[in-house]
Length: 405
Image (cartoon, rainbow, N blue to C red; front, side, top):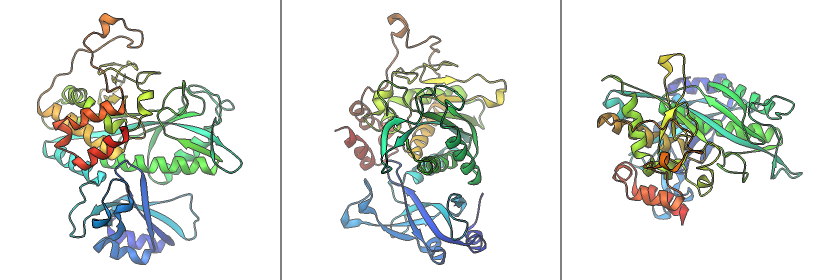
C-alpha cells in the first residue's frame, strides 16, 4: 500500500503502533534497522535519523561516520507476527550524507538510478524472482544443524514434505504485508523449498525480496528451524538459486530480443554481484545451475531460458545463474542496465543452444563462453569492465572483490 508521510503518522496512531523500524541494507544486501518511537517519526521524515556508518561493513570509516536514514513512506508495512497491542511497522529508507545528498553506496539508490535511466529511454521492465532455500533442524539450544528438516523431493506432498506448513505461514505473512506470491513447493533437495513472486517494478521487487528473506527466517525460527539461502549448503545436493524473470517493454517497439542480448553480453562482468560468495561457484555448473553463456526456449540447462506460455502477453526472460546471497538492489540494477544497453545498441542474441548442455558433445559446446569459474575470476572481470566501473563506485567493487582474497 502507498502512503504519504502524513498518512503514515495517522496510521501509527490508529493502529496502536509503538515501534517504527527504519530499514536499509549494507552493500552486500544484509538487512539492518534501527527502531524509533512513533513520536520521532515526523522529525525522521524531515531531517533523518543518524547512525554510525563506520560500523556497517563497506560503508565509511570512523573519520566520516555520520549518515542519515530518511524513511520512504510508500514502503510502510506492519510486521504481522508482532503483538496486536503495541504493533511494529517497517519502512525502507534512503541513505544520505549530512548535507542531504544521496550516499553513493546506497544500493537502493543505485537501483533507483537504473530505473530513472530506463524511464528516460522509454523502457519498462517488470521483475519476478524465484527463491530457493533450505530448512534445517536446530539443536536443543536453538543453534542450526546440518540436518535437513525432511528427505522429500521435487513437489512432494505431506507427510513426506515437512515444509508445507512453514511455506503456508510464509505466504500468508507475505499476503498480510501486501506482497503477492505466485507459487510455492518443495524443491529437489532434502529440506529444500521454493517460493515464486508475482511481477513488480524493479524497486518494489527488490524491497519485496529483502522482506521475503526476513519473513522466511522468522517463520523458520518460529517453527524451531533454520532457513539457509546459501547457494550450496549441502555438498552433492542441488544448490539454491534466485532465478530472475524479466518482462521488458519499450515505447519504440519489441525490445525482448535486444534486452536478452544485453543480459548475455554483460553477464560475465556482472557475475561478481549475482554470485557474491565462494560457495556460489560450487553451485554453478551442476544440478540445473548454468555454467555456459547461452539461451534456449524452455531449456533448464541454459543460462537463460524462455519459459513456455499459452499467453503471448506473459512472455519472459528467465536468468538462472544468480543466487539468493546477491544484493537484490544491485543485481536488479546491473541487469536492468545490461538489458537497456542491449536495447540502446540494438544487440542481437546468438543462436539458441537447443540441447542439454550437461550431456552435450565437445563440438556442440565449441564456441560457447563460460561464466567465471571462481569469485577471484568474477572479481577480475568486474574490475576490468567499463560497464561496471561506469555504474558502480570503485569502493563498492573493491569490497566485493576483497571477498575472493
